[in-house]
Length: 179
Ligand SMILES: CC(C)(COP(=O)(O)OP(=O)(O)OC[C@H]1O[C@@H](n2cnc3c(N)ncnc32)[C@H](O)[C@@H]1OP(=O)(O)O)[C@@H](O)C(=O)NCCC(=O)NCCS
Image 1 (cartoon, rainbow, N blue to C red):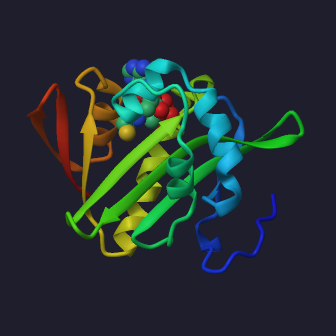
Image 2 (image 1 turned 30 degrees about the vertical axis):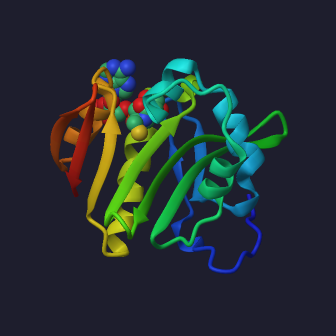
Image 3 (image 1 turned 90 degrees about the vertical axis):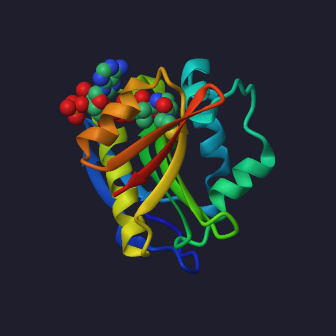
């Protein structure tokens, strides 16, 4: 799956990963042209997964969010996507991202896997890779908001050996993660 040459695109983060079902996925940094694939991923996520990712019900992924997610500097903001070929075109199966907010001095961490590919050991390695890339850029402290029912992400963070503190805040957990 050749990637176009886009200024600043860090090709060195491209890799391959074999899922528990034997399927091989291509991991690469997100591209500014990935908007339609990201929208397709969103549209194929269950309402439950969307809620776990965005902590609210969302019927559509707004244009400005798609732009923000796909137009990144690959340093203070980064996203890795997992790609397969499906129906003779590319599809994004998962996204892991971090985004540093200099005003708040916080780096948000998030991951989402398409429902039909969950539990196949994609989310955990994707998150670990994104965290490793952040560390290369001098970022090792993260924050995230978590639905209290999200035991899967809780287990993943613990399995990865990160130091995680949970603070109860208006019905959610605010996480402080040191990797
Ligand atoms: C959370 C999420 C990213 C995990 O991705 P995934 O690809 O399904 O996770 P993995 O297959 O890598 O699972 C990692 C571990 O959790 C365990 N696990 C996965 N799903 C599980 C489930 N439903 N119940 C219990 N354990 C589960 C697996 O056993 C695995 O452990 P192992 O490595 O020892 O086998 C995915 O479920 C998702 O997209 N959820 C919706 C969005 C979300 O919650 N994002 C996180 C907040 S930003």
